[in-house]
Image 1 (cartoon, rainbow, N blue to C red):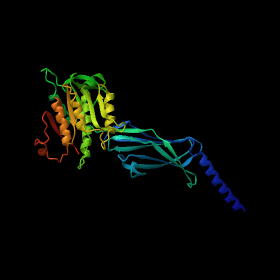
Image 2: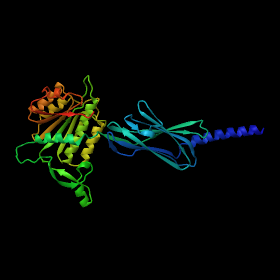
Image 3: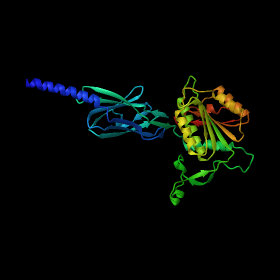
Image 4: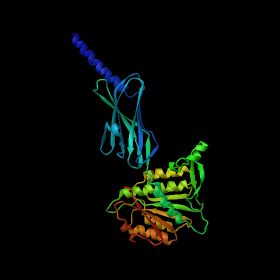
Length: 380
């Protein structure tokens, strides 16, 4: 009889804990998954904090947190544990929490590809005290990470700037070089480290950077072609073109030159084609970075030929037009020709693979009257 009472008591206790757990498990239980950084550059590392809080008297023997990341964000080292990769990078972490306890983990991510990455939700899975029942609840998350395009070698960008400088209007023989040293100014967010004047910074105590002359009348418009719809695909050259556009725009802003970037593809934020005007402030440059991070290369809003043809109707003699395109199809060359025929100063930057023979590119096949061409050997 005593054994029967013990069994009945044990059964009652089991069903009681099950009912209590069912009612109480999610109360006071919270989770937050958040990127530590707002943005990083392609190839850099980012960090993700995984926080779970049990703010009630009842301990939680085991709580599982599940969420998914894009495969372009890879966990580093030991952080790869508890993950599985299929269409996304799925993670499952288990926590054991006493009453009124918080637990935080920090995970390191390798950001291999530009883009905007979000974690829309995290799932909580609670296990009862006997690990016989599981309970599920989804929690909305509001966190995002921009991975900006990597900025290509500044020395190579300097070569583009020299080309642009050589194409400036020459009405005034005393016209200053827009990339000539002009003085020192206070450091501004977005200035590269190699611009810092360490001697001037040491004297004043605040970071100072070298600045360069830019004429008020000369400006640059960058056309970015992401079309890659031929039989042979070159996604690495498309990405190199995006990085060139980002680095060139950065350099132009450093020199306080007016610039505009226009492309023939939409970003993830909008269905209109890329178009950002760079003003003399930091915010416009960050706007461009965000747009380039999210620009889609799997579709185009319009052909580059059409963009160039429309520009040919409104040529500004004080502007240098820079076209970045690895494509060399007849449609592009026709658009470049129409822009040059309208009197525009045109520089065509052509990204190519390192293995490609330069002799084939220098045979005059792709030369267009009135268009200056610059072959860019991609580091891919």
